[in-house]
Image (tube, rainbow, N blue to C red; front, side):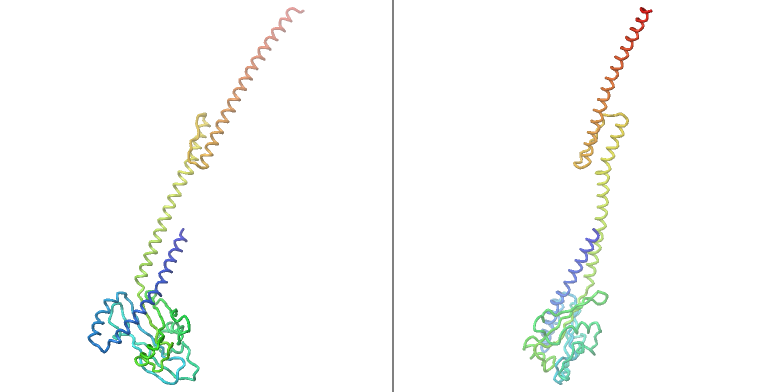
Length: 326
């Protein structure tokens, strides 16, 4: 029973954990829209003020996001683009992007021998932790032919209090290429190349509290279920097993004291009722055998009396014979 509750709790935790990547994908889409929306409105101060006031109101989910760009791109032709990708961090319904943000690594293209650069090398030298670099290195610098939309990674940080979701953003259309060549660089960006990796950090404290509450409820339910099972077991043993046996013992004690009129009265529709019927049949058989023995004893007594009378007559005849014969 405890194992079943543990399995149920583990399955619930697994389902909760599976929801974090789905939430991250949705928030990445939101971050992309906000990022482009605010960038396109930078030249319109009045519209930008409207966005600054509106974004916190429509952004009800508390999370932070930014975009990380690799420092080196594979397949460079020797040119360098020192344009820095615009990255900002939104904390819940915080300030719009572009202000007070965490700056991502500069987007550059490094020339080489034509052999390309590995994914790990493209992130080295950036102000990122080795663990994060290892996750980022999983994403190819060029979008694969198939399955680009399925590339994602996630991990828990801050002792599980925050879920960090990573999703690569590739230049999937010529429009993206033309725009980012001018705005973020590099100037020789090609379709399918990695532009940046969207990083979304979702607070996990509320989920942890909900999971702890769920575990407490499951544990309480398990304890209560165990207690009720013990009470039910006691009732079953006390009234279904012990009580019929005690009644049979009382009837047998009464019969042993000579009260042959006692009978076992058990109506439980189970083996105990069959045992009571067998016990009553045994009593009836004993009474019948006792009656037969009494009848036999009575017959023997009558035969003994007849034999005594015959012996008396024989004794009288012998005495008379002795009187008449010398």
